[in-house]
Image 1 (cartoon, helix red, strand yellow):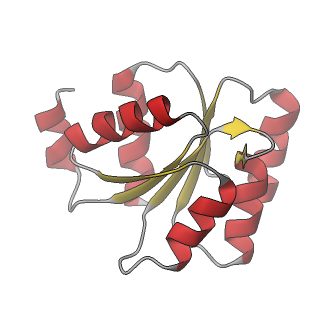
Image 2 (cartoon, rainbow, N blue to C red):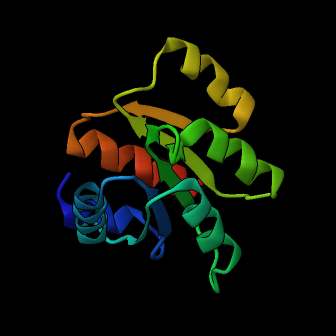
Length: 133
């Protein structure tokens, strides 16, 4: 699916928060998502992501979180966001999620788990599906 085809299936410009401790990875993911028609805001920690969502003028549709404790812990972030009544989707995208973590994901309110690396096409399909939920 080309970026133009992907853009056609997205009804508006969904807003995404990408939570990743490494600045270079945050930048690359923002460029990748924005080239596919999304608005992407990066956060370096769970606390930064929560602050971004609390003070947002417009609603965010998706939070994509890495899982690299202690500053970026996707499971803890999901639990905190659901407790604050975040209605958007939450995805964990990480190398470090193991089977025991995946079992906890649904309990903590995570909608999807993708292991890094995932092919770009599959990643964008999952993002589009989560933004439409």
